[in-house]
Length: 280
Ligand SMILES: [Zn+2]
Image 1 (cartoon, rainbow, N blue to C red):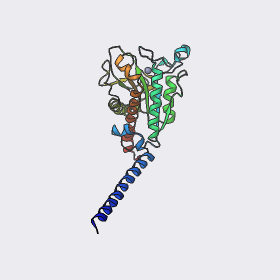
Image 2 (cartoon, rainbow, N blue to C red):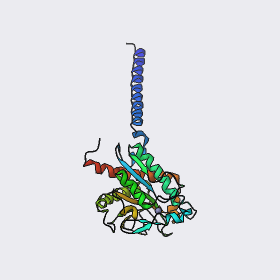
Image 3 (cartoon, protein in one colour):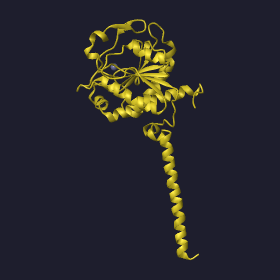
Image 4 (cartoon, protein in one colour):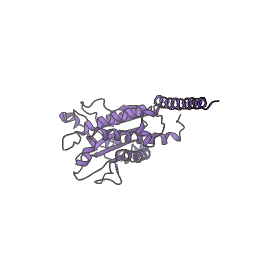
């Protein structure tokens, strides 16, 4: 074969190999998108590999509500809270600039729900908008119980001392009526994995003004006392602290926070399903 023709032949072969490689990459990209892996890069970055939460029900409970401030008579009435009575609901905290906790919790719950649904979970919120009143704490707990939820996270942001920073998770202690005993162990486990995932995703420090290593254990919260499924409260930061507040008001930070909550729940459910052979 003359040198010139041989050179053209070699170039043609190289062209075919290159096209093949490109087609392979394109196919892999398309398949990733089809099965959802390509849609959730933050989860992969955080170490949550290909996950399916199909068949799992998660309840997200965005704390407070937009109409609470104007409905004192409704939210101040006493409801059962696990061996004692407590107010139906409260107005919640806000930043110095007036960004309210109820708006924060609803936004974060919606973002988190979107991520978890993309992973296959059925996600139910305890309220469908940010303009209503309540629901009362006993009703919020009933939502998770009635659905037999695999896990519930009640989303809040604290109104702590101005100088106090950081987030913390609240796990249940035995309620005064001793009726939540069955959820204490799994809820503590949920609190642990959620604390890790949320800190990793957001970069926010563990609370330095209460609790121990980002965790408190309480028996005075109706939402935890009345739950019969694994449940924790997440206080995402201190709205009264300027540094924390700057994060909480930032939509980009809230997107990372949602990934953190979703990753914590995913890790909890994956670990829980490994022993019961529910994984596909
Ligand atoms: Zn709150």
